[in-house]
Length: 278
Image (cartoon, rainbow, N blue to C red):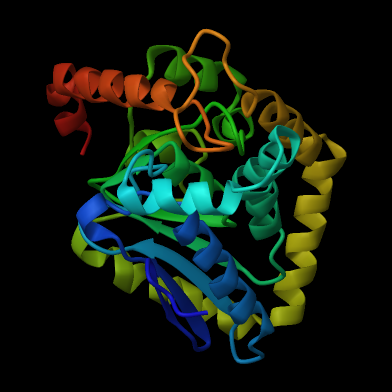
């Protein structure tokens, strides 16, 4: 596959870099499918011991691409000729099952987060084994699709953040268990690579068995079942919203636009508080 929206760099530490900096790495369907292909290449590469996911430009990811020309055309093409049931299955695979597959990749994965990590950005970061973030990172969780927020930060904190629809700083996200480590922005890549090299030295078999054991424990507690259940409910059309025009299988995305606008308004109101936490 020729990559249009990502960069892939193979090696002992494979790099998957989101590469739509002009869109703050908003995730089109093309990007998500290219990510999946790159992850599969890294898994199949016997030299690769760790996979790092990062974003080019000013942000890790601003979330789902809602309305770019490329995204609308791609979504229309992929959903063409599909029944409502089949198009729902397509959305489920892209926004739920694909992320669950990434969560279970048999090699260690690290999300290296800087700048904005919003909605869909939270989803792809959450699907990685752990997250290293820069001090300037601002994160806001998703409430549907690959819905892991209550697992990521606990039920009460998840409700607090999602009800208010406000950002978490990197330090706050680390306090509540979503982010593993926070570094100065200038040191983030160096420190992430340093850690990844140590994981490579640990060995693939050991890391794979540890990952399987921990993920299996979470699944016995209901992780994957709950994610699929919420995702199934979420992708149904909200009857209070007008149908999308001219795009078979289109999702009712006006909810995300409203939430994004509110989050940015809240961020401006709380700017002093957020600056003091950096």
